Length: 141
Image (cartoon, rainbow, N blue to C red; front, side, top):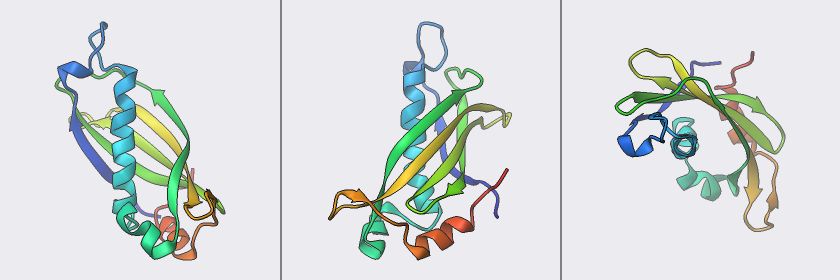
């Protein structure tokens, strides 16, 4: 097991705010989605090579966001990630959105990614090399 990976840094802009003057829930999803793309690259398994090297890619099957503390315009965020579960055809990531200055958690994102064979248009077994790489980053409670 290794430490969590830093996968994204961003700033909350005024256009992210709602009528309550904090970041609206609709804007958390793009930050976490972008972070997921970076997660694969930081794991050494970039989307740009996954299909060519392993014959599969992944699709998001389920995502759950937990909102912990609101964010305001000008807040700097850091998203970190870890592998929380490894199955036979899927894996799960836990991402946390933290304040860059205080390290407080503002939101978390539980994501299930399913391995997908584009030729058959069905889920596929996780390749052994991918499993081995994910194991290096598995964090167990």
